[in-house]
Picture (cartoon, rainbow over the protein chains, first blue to last red):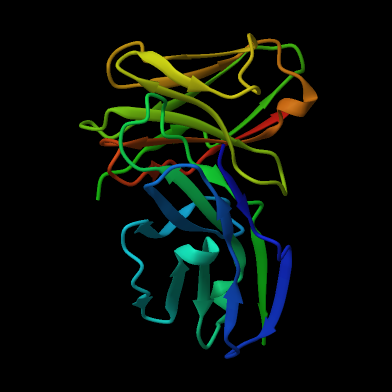
Length: 118
Length: 113
């Protein structure tokens, strides 16, 4: 069974602050993918990143960075110099990698509501 | 960039009615999914579909629900005898294969009154 925990229900920051969203996962699969999605108020799911469990290198994309630590089963997401447009719900998700005999469903965390204020 | 298209974007239905939510996946993608998100809650897996059959379904996906790929392009979710608690955003998703990412549609907001 897979499980994704996002313990932070809601975070409020002032614009230009850095903010880290936590994600902890559980899986029995030896290989898997981790994802982050952004859900703005309009409701769609916006893909941010996919990380292969083989690859523990941290990744940076503009103001976004991700810290994957297999030893602690965590995949945290940091936004540097936050902006009002970053206000959204952010979901971490997990799926097995490769053929599993099932449908390779995505298991989502409960999400973190980020509010960035002026 | 190819998109997954969902229609309608918003549907209101009377309790007890049947609804069909429609999705047009990307043409060369092989795995199809429906997810549900009750307002303010997390995104939950409903069903996955591959090779013209269900490959996995959640405990939510009971006899009230069915999926179909009637013409090789559309992928539909039918909800029979809708209940108030079926009100949610329904997302269709697809992927090329198990080593690839997912593409989500923009969702259908279903409101049962």
